Length: 161
Image 1 (tube, rainbow, N blue to C red):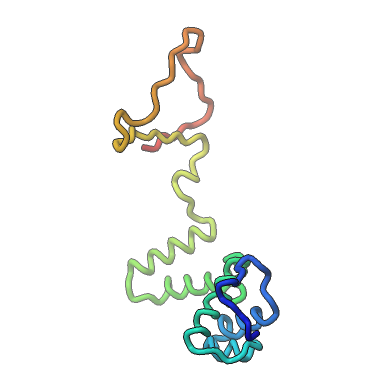
Image 2: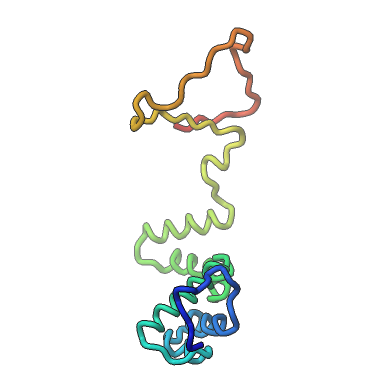
């Protein structure tokens, strides 16, 4: 480990046993970086070098792990999040915060849906011309004589501007 060079650190490689042990100690158990490095099998480095190495190892862990797994590793899964939202909704002194927590809980439980999600059919988004480009947008489509003049749409249509 004496020839460890942070510049050659491969963030895309799999975590080594020592790196995984460091992540467990430092991130999950909240042990200071320098102490966690030593306990994980790295030799004692200067404070600055230890902090840089710790950041690189944590970045490597974050790169190779999905957000859901990271929250799960920290024992902060869906149950913990739901309990936190419930606690805020019941005990926050601010009425607006309680209302937002209740709305979030209702949305997470499926009681509320966004307006666009709840309406069946097709959503057509019409954008204006881009002012940054002179003339803006793309040129109009050429009119062909044999194309139909009307278009029939079955179902409901929501136009969002």
